[in-house]
Length: 283
Ligand code: PAF
Image 1 (spheres, helix red, strand yellow):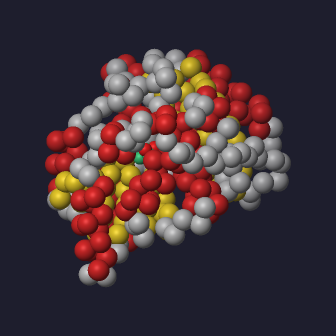
Image 2 (tube, rainbow, N blue to C red; image 1 turned 135 degrees about the vertical axis):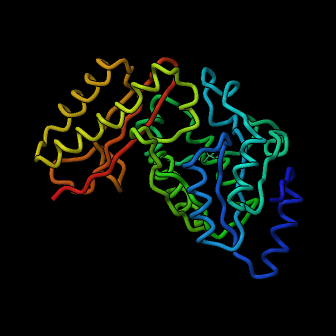
């Protein structure tokens, strides 16, 4: 696997590949790779000739009191994992390479509307950071296709909106959530959990499953379902941020009669903020 640190070198490399008629798939990551990321790479390998994984802990998507400094950085282990599944190129730039004028001093991409809800409500500016770096990576690589995980459901919706609104010539593919044996969605932030918290953590998914079951049973009082789920999460030791029943495609609060539903939740376990979601097609 070729490890590239500069935009110039990456673009020279990718230009050669394009001249040889090779297609390019992009897998953006912030490193600390786990099975969920490897699954993104495997899907990317089915979609294009060359897979470029990017590893960049993007400072502009972290709020002032968030975990930027502590975010796990495991470069050598990430390289080993990517080598083991034959990823072609790892682009791991410095902050200065990506934001030579500083992260706060750069043009940015803002998707309106859906970025103010859910995670956007509790993490103001987060999605501007995400769309800005993702747009930059799309422009830097000019990839044909990019793969994102469905665990970050809102992020995926925001990126799809950006691509559509700005006519970015890239195809977005999503990959289902990869879960541990007990249902906990794979996330780099799971590594923050203590042993005790790790035992409790799968209850986030269980709460979502219970909401889904009640929707399938015909329950239509969405607010009551959301509140019950939050109460249940609080009683097991979480500090819930939100549990929301949304229209899966429009990403807005679901109305009675909507068929395609997504139930999304974010909750703190100790200092660790976990997110998860589950979709549901109602009859
Ligand atoms: O999902 C992530 O890991 C990040 O938000 C992304 C898409 C790599 C942008 O920094």
